[in-house]
Amino acid sequence: MRVDLHCHSTHSDGSFAADDVAARAGRAGVELFCLTDHDSLAGYAATRAALPGVTVLRGVELSCKHENRTIHLLMYGVEEGPGHDALEQRLVGVQDDRRSRLRAICGRLEELGIHLDAEQILRDAAGRTPGRPDVARALLAAKAVRSMREAFERYLHDNGPADVAFARISLAEGLELGKAAGARMSLAHPHTLRSPALVADLFRRHRADGLEGVEALYGRYQHAEREGWLRMARQLELVVTGGSDFHGDAMPDVAQPGIDLPEPHAARLRDWLGVARAS
Image (cartoon, rainbow, N blue to C red; front, side, top):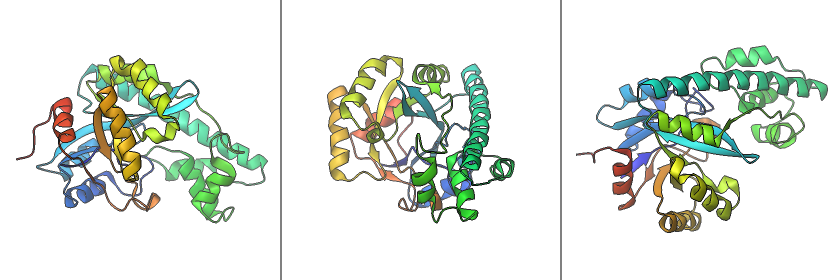
């Protein structure tokens, strides 16, 4: 079964509109789709309208903090109701924090002799999640760097000269919000935690809280890396999820949405999500 349960649009840091991302997924043969913009549910209606005949879930990639590490929590199948409303309200607060962070990053750059107009960057980011990629693009436009990569390597990487931390949602709160909203939850790109032992411990401690899936089939994983995470999924009896992490031109090494999810992982995923097999 071809799926994509992890991709981004202009509502966060992707380069294509939500309906365009969905249409690309449809042309790639995706049967099960979920747009997972960073800290935003805004693109769901557009993706559902763009993919008639395809199972489309409402989802988000929620940035959480756990023991001084950033955990990216994928939520699938957010349901209408009080839980959805509470999640949306919390995301509004996250967006406010992100805007404050962007202004503070520009203040750090000013101290380093680089002037950027934070308010203009925020205006240009209207309608989507503002973040460090927006600052990187502004640095590139100002000719302060020669590439987005250089912007992050010189200034914007975690704990870099211009980076500013912001108060993320705790993993415990994120899992609680997801469960209240009826969502199924998976750990995105587990390699970013840099320790399989830490990942395994995370699942042992939080599976009962709703962390039941692992993105073992991630767009940029080669065979050996996939096999390592699939082995962990078998050992811990986790649900295997898959996503391309498609960002469009913002991440050109992933050319299109779509991941092939083989049986029996596909069958278990459908059961977990409560979706029927495409006819």
